[in-house]
Image (cartoon, rainbow, N blue to C red):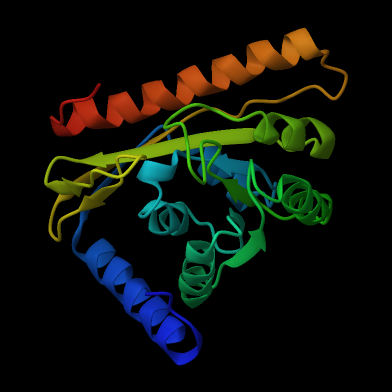
Length: 223
């Protein structure tokens, strides 16, 4: 059943309360968070990149390192409206588009936000995968905007891993959660296609390693 109007708003509010309520019960640990804290404290914007399946707790992880204002690229798929409205309850803004459908519109919106000095967030394997395969859009956005990319992931051993394409991981209340932050990656504006492809592969590998590191630290098996 497609949610609309009041039902959609109610679902978004309930989702926001569920995520926030769960986040408040978790036992948080951060790894490698010094650099991102320093950038936020200095008011230096960046592009936050995380896998689609490890995204539900990133809003709280970002807040915990000092982040407040962020613009998130959200799919124009009908599910995207629910996500966008849920984010609004956290005080975050959505830019509609994706790495696939409506990519041009999304890229233009994100670039406009980037050039205004705001921090952005993107799931570079979304909205429909393949899982943990990095699409080139985040590289193009970083190259044109001049913003560095900071990758992040998380894991919790006591969690529900859904059978969806992205392996969506939702921690159970009271779980220990480990957030792994990567170092900022700069994409030179004059990088040629070969260099861009190499950086794309490097970022994908880094993001997979961060997810695996988080899984290892909580004792969760990873593939």
